[in-house]
Amino acid sequence: MHKKARRIADRVIRADIRSNSSSKTPGSPSNGAMLIDTEGQQYRTTYGDIQEGVSFAGSVTMSSGDSRKGVLVFEVPKTMKIKKLQFALDSGFADHKGEWLTE
Image (cartoon, rainbow, N blue to C red; front, side, top):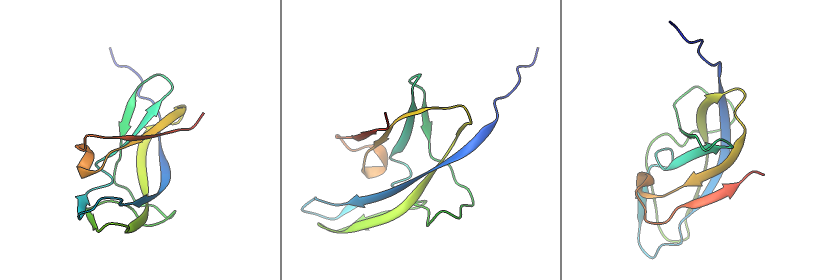
């Protein structure tokens, strides 16, 4: 028996990250970002061709006070309702995570 697959769509999130660390902060923003829907399911970033801006695919190193702008691409079901964006530096391994609610 085969289940019908859900249709998938890209969601693009624009991000502006700033380092408040006293030392250089390495990381890969796309590895540390996750979308969480209203059902509690989480979605990681994906790679794709986008026209909405420069992708955060790859690594960045920032000194204290530096900032970077880019976009994060998520492949999610078209019916998905975003509840929050969760983000952690150090490729997602940082002790502290930031969350931004969309509701």
